[in-house]
Length: 94
Image (tube, rainbow, N blue to C red; front, side, top):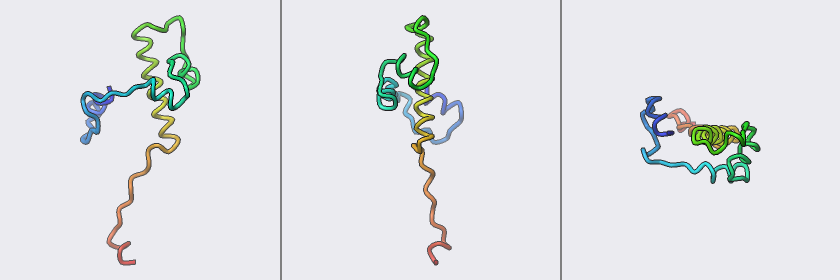
């Protein structure tokens, strides 16, 4: 889904291969210390209904919410460094 989203956004240099995968359970274990979807969502502040759980559509939606939450948290914590500043000719003569 990340590859498809990059294509829809017309990103010219898509870093993802069409068959790239992300293991949200493992990412949740790293980010929140839990690999169980219900527990990870609870810790991430994502509402989760045990009554709706195990429905393919519900679990897929909550997994996507969790994935986006992990990526956004990583970004907030500085996971996306600013681009490197290139030297200008003026800097080299200083």
